[in-house]
Amino acid sequence: AIHAVTYYTSEADALAGTNPIATPAAFNATTQTIWAEIINTSTVSGCPDYTSFEVVIELLPEPVITTTDDVHTICVDFITGQPIRTLTLQSNVAPNGHIYDWYLDGALVDTTTDGQYIATAPGTYTVIVTGPAPNECESAESAGFTVIQSGPASPINGGFVVSNAFGEEQVITVLVEGYGQYQYSLYEEGPWQNSNVFTGVAPGTHTIYVRDTNEDACGTLPLTDVSIINYPHYFTPNGDGYNDTWNVIGLAGDQYQAIIYIFDRYGKLIKQISPDGEGWDGTFNGNLVPSDDYWFTVEFTEGNIRREFKAHFALKR
Image (tube, rainbow, N blue to C red; front, side, top):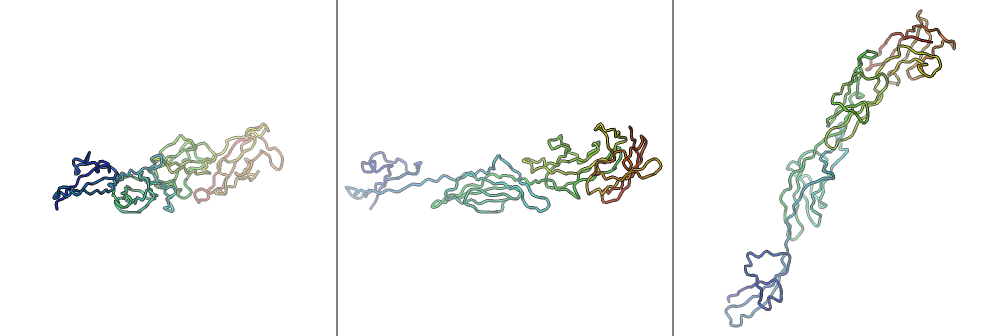
C-alpha cells in the first residue's frame, strides 16, 4: 500500500481537508498541536485516518554574564589571601530546570542550577547553559566577563617611618603593600597624592589615609599616631589661656617612651615631664621662675633606636 500524509494546524481543517500545510519541510512551527491525515492511495476510498502530535519549540538560552552595578573587582586580604568581597556573577537566564556550567579561563569551576556563581578569584569567566529535559538544548558559550583582583592596603612594620625628628624638613614615608593601587592623604576626604612621601607636615600627631584606587575600590586604611616631632621655641605662662605651658609636640604615646628634662642656664634640673602630660607651667617647687632661656633634653625611641635631643627655648612673662 502507498500512503499519503497531509498536515494541518487544526483538527477541523484535517477533518474537512482544508488549509493544509503546503510545504511541511519549510513550515515554521511554534509550540502547537499538528494534525495529520493519512490516506491509502491504493484504494478508492483512501481509508483516511487521523492523528496528532505536539511540537515543542525550545529557544536556545543566550547567557550574558553581569554583576550588580557592573562591578568587576573582588577584594582580597593581602596577608591571608582570603577574599573579603566576592562577586555574584549572574547568567541572566532564569532557572527553570537549566544547568549552568561555569568556566574560569577556560577550565570548568562549577555547575549550578540557580543561574549564578560566586567569583572569588580573578580571571575571565564564561558560562554555558543547558535547557531542561527533554530537549536539553545547549547554549553557545557566553562572552567573557573579566574579574579584577584588588584589596585594601596592608601596613609594613607599622605602616610608616618618620625621619629627621626635630629637623626643619621631617619626612613621613608610608610603607604598605597589597593587591591594589594606592593614594595617600593627611585627610579622610583628601586631597590625595600618588606619592607615599610627605614633607612640610605641621608638628603634632596625624592620621594618614591610604585608599585603593582601582575600579570599585576596596576601602581605605587609616594609619594613626603619625607624629611630626618638634617643640615651641617660647611660651608665655601668664594665665591667659595661650601658650601657658611648654611641652614637646608629637612624642605622646607609649611607642616613643619619651622623657623630657628641663634645666636652667646653670644646668640645674627644674622639671621632668612627659609628652603625655600637660607640660611645664614655668614653676619650680611651686614658685615662678624668671623670664629666661631654658634648656631641655628629651630621650625617646625612634625606629627601635633610643635617641636623645637637646635644645633650648625661652620663657617670657
